Length: 437
Image (cartoon, rainbow, N blue to C red):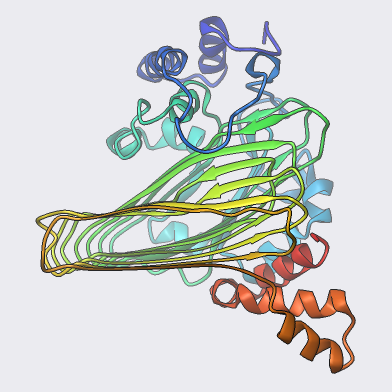
């Protein structure tokens, strides 16, 4: 690449040429870049104080664009071995993808699923090998002009996950992707596209980490999920970004008749996190839920939540948000529920709970709830409290020290989130929280 840092049209054309993309994708990237330059930052949430000219928007670590199919071929195998990814694949996954900086460097799936027509690969590979289905869905649920950072993603997207599950196929064990940033001033812009066809079921999990640097880095992903009639998708995320990462992500699912979408969203790190998983409940009887945890410590600002858009009758949504703030951190809930006039007998329940562990930390609940027909039901409950001193005293009177007692109370506070995680992820979450405060 002629230019390591910063972004312009020449760099975008180089990226597309390196990836050997069709002309329509190059044109799409340039159109998205123009929109990105013209759009303002969001008029809500924390200030994005990041030097975009200092970012590296595309970094390769392989000799070509092909992902390794065995761990022995993976160029950064040792990094993934250290975090237990190799063991996880062997024990309880049906397939795994691993992205390092701008590229997917490893991709695998069991043959049994391939024989059933399941596609699980990187977005770059999907563009080359499955262009028809790729083009049918790409950029249709989250258009590049949706917001400034969706436009930036459209201009420089690289890597990410593509999943297609054919009709009447149930994937018994999760598919997983792991995203890692190690380079200083790095920008990572993966794109994920999941299509779950009629009467099919999939659980997709992703983990995110980064090495800490004193200067800021950016993670700006776009996730589009299509859940067809009678299908279901569970999307689980545990992010543990370093606190120099700006995490600006757009995630949206469209759910058809009697389909089910579940977001299980864990936000443990990042300097600034702006993330609002959304469900568009388009078909009658569709349901969507989001169970999330946001944890903020010193110098961290979590602005997270969920959205549910009810467009059809008898649709249901359930939003559970758990926030924890300590050492002067900020953990806000920001969400939206809209029930259209055509969504008769729709039902939505929102519950937001926050624990502040000291007097310097902050939390706000910022909901937008709109009900446009009289047959629907919406309930919103929000609480902000300190750690329960009586419970803390009780546990300490039983022989626990203060740190261990606080840890148990916090784990109990997020129990509704933990019980929806696979065992390995729940153990990892416990370890992260134990060392967090």
